[in-house]
Image (cartoon, rainbow, N blue to C red):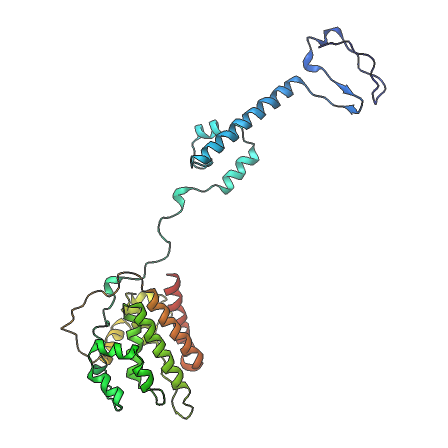
Amino acid sequence: MALNFSRTPTTSGKPPAVSKGLRSQSSDYMEYAQSGTYTNTLERLVKEMEDTQRLDELQKKLQEDIRQGRGIKSPLRTGDQDSTDDGDGLLEEHREFLKKFSVTVDAIPDHHPGEEIFNFLNSGKIFNQYTLDLRDSGFIGESAVEKLILKSGKTDQIFLTTQGFLTTAYHYVQCPVPVLKWLFRMMSVHTDCIVSVQILSTLMEITIRNDTFSDSPVWPWIPSLSDIAAVFFNMGVGFGSLFPLETLQPDFNEENLISETQKTLGGKESEDSPYSPVFSALPETNILNVVKFLGLCTSIHPEGYQDGELMLLILMLFKMRFG
């Protein structure tokens, strides 16, 4: 570098003195321009070049890690040696940022944190589609369609129901409660999703027709809290899971629930149909159909459930929904 400078105008009016030993003291060299003064030492330039080169290397390494699926190493997961080797080029604020938003792989559980409330080995414990029979419900038919259904077997009863025979039979007259209970239970337990939806359609249509009979002295039938608990219990949900709060319990227990339900089924065990689990997976369609029918019931008969029963019903449905 040539160190012979002519007098350069500066803002201060005087240029600094230039000594002969400036060549050996190049780190203290200061350059002045017409637009103003600024300082830049060779040591700082060298350090900036090294930092830039190091940042470029880190960027290339991060891009390579991302391509290989490794991503950014978290300071929370790496050891002191790894953090020292990989993080020397990171500013302290960047380290804090990574610590704040880092995600540990083993901190995310493999399974849903909710409670397992369905025990499918107990599904169908009270009744199933092969044990539900209108002939055991104490119902006595009067019309030709009712007598036809009562003369039919269990499979034919379902077939006649899905073909609209019950809807026709109870288009102008009230539907007996045993028939409505049979439809409600069959809808909740039938393993064929299409059949379950068809039974729901029949049940809702008959219920709506019953509600149109304004001259009737009684409200249309809606399932009681024990009826609802029975179908969920029959799906494999434990009684304690349906009513988990000790301070908010129904006026019946598990034994009462089973015995009362079996009485309405005729009070006899099905020896010809040995018990076996009905569901092997979550019966989503059946649960959804039950909830849809409950929505209809609370709409046409808002006073059908007392405040305590509504609290238990809401708690039960929330438990079914969120586990």
